[in-house]
Image (tube, rainbow, N blue to C red):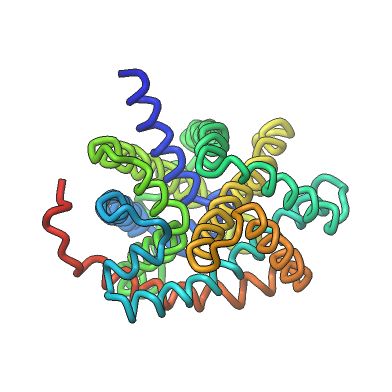
Length: 348
């Protein structure tokens, strides 16, 4: 019983760690997709959470059923061989770019917060990824089992502090001049972007889990955890609206008010979330390339890290601004297709 519970929690932690990413720690994703729409934000977060439950579970169940070796197998099952291969080719390129963004972000944290040069930060992070990923999926599960509880701890602290702050109920009354149509589109955009990026690790994770009940339970717990953290960030950001929008890292301003100890946890948390996304993306890319080239996984991981290191010389901000909007647009098409795909034999 304890072994099954542990596996469920590992699935949930990996789901949360893969989906939430650095966007939660910075607060920018929560602000852009939810909080700036005022009181609609709470409702649209609930919609996004429900979609994570439904589509995240569906993705992992399909991967388990077809024993997908990589996300290309899933895309072929969903869209057919020809279109599935095209989607996977595009994802291969974009995931390489996103991985470079994550590595650049890690180097930036070393430079801006810990007094270590950008290049040294890139090399340290890349070396840690390489040695960890030699253990495969086990490394991803272990890292998320450590990072996610810390994420939850920080979230609880933020919630407690928020409800002790004057105006803590502002999330109920906050109004916005933005279009309600944009507000209702936001949970679909957010879910599409994050789930399509998470294929790289959630597909092989689902394929490794033979027990459907473990997948369903882990996905439910992970989705509720994601929703809880999104709500916590939304509540905290709402209290400080509209002024908080001027900050590049909105949650950073809130963390500073909680003291140096919490601020240190916050900086570490940003790095940890970037790192979990980084190793997840590299793992997915390695599986995808291994299926095509049949080279050793260690060699492929090394080559991917070298390519991402070279791409990260462009810089974090420019990479982010160029790649993310493009991937978000394509992700909406992927979301529509996975929603309409009928896999009746896979329904819980």
